[in-house]
Amino acid sequence: MRPPHSGAWWLWALGLAVAASRTTNPVLLAVILAVAGFVAVHCRSNAPWSSAYGMFLKFGLLVIAIRLVFSILVGGITGPTVLFTLPEVPLPDWAKGIRLGGAVTAEGLLYALYQGLQLATLLCCVGAANALADPRRLLKSVPAALYEVSAAVVVALTVAPQLAVSARAVRRARALRGDAVRGRNAVRTLLVPVLEDALDRSLHLAAAMDSRGYGRTAGLPKRTRVTTAVLVLGGLIGLCVGAYGLLDAQAPAFVGVPVLLVGVVLAGAGLVLGSRRLSRTRYRPDRWTVPSVLIAASGAIAGATAVLAEAFGDLSLIPSTVPLSAPEVPLVPVIGVLAALLPVLLTRQEARS
Image 1 (tube, helix red, strand yellow):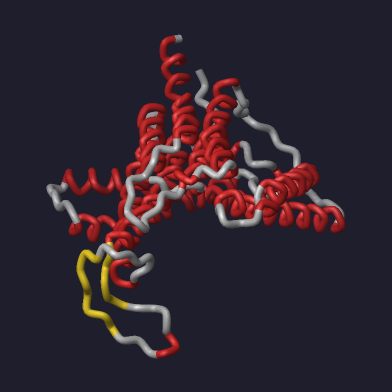
Image 2: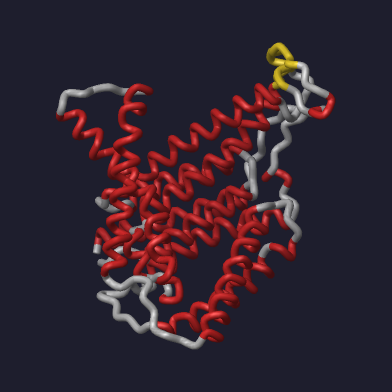
């Protein structure tokens, strides 16, 4: 059986990310983390980048720690439950409204924890996509109109997976030399060679693509090139603004789906027009099979249930921290997120067959 389309894994992960962006409920965020991690571990291949999820998970923990530290030092949400008081640094009048130090409340820390957990969950969703999707196979599906920027695209897509590969190789090499340093000292000694090796690998891949004709275009009239550029650029702006509207619950309603659809139409027209610049052949092109469509649909269900729950005013998505209270379980979004476990069932069915 051929592996699922790489685009299906990214759509699945983006659906989970949309669900995470709509809530600060720690119960729902924990379910999203568990689903993303379980699918990433169960469905990943033996490819070198399959361990990228662990790296993103560590980044997520770091984000939570930084958010808590900033909450303690700079403050934020206040409440009656004072845990301890730090010496407060006096600031000039032009910085009125900002404080350094002072009382640290349980309500403020809990609010910061929820916010940090949300950011960490978004990072882990991207990490799951990096662990499951093959960046090279995904690049084969890039439309011809984007070949001029394909080198930059492949470098951006392969940096994170290559970091995981390089970290494993450098750690193994140092272990063979008898260097068993761990903890913070290991990070200090591994950071430079890992970054250098990952960047070299990505640049070598980009150079290989350039030597095989990526980015070379046939001659077209200037009017066609300008029209293509305007359509693609307008479409990308629409996609970015629409994605922002979907991910930000405070954005106006017309900024979300309507702008996203306009961006899709403009970008699609630009890509079709731009694809006329060159003809190419593909060796064993990836197809959108039934399992690939089901994987993408399961992620879409997770995101759609959270968006609908918010639209119907489900207050449990944003639990209150003032006063302190235990978060409720948003039942419908949790069921929607659990639907994103479908790739595990598909993998088991393929293994049996």
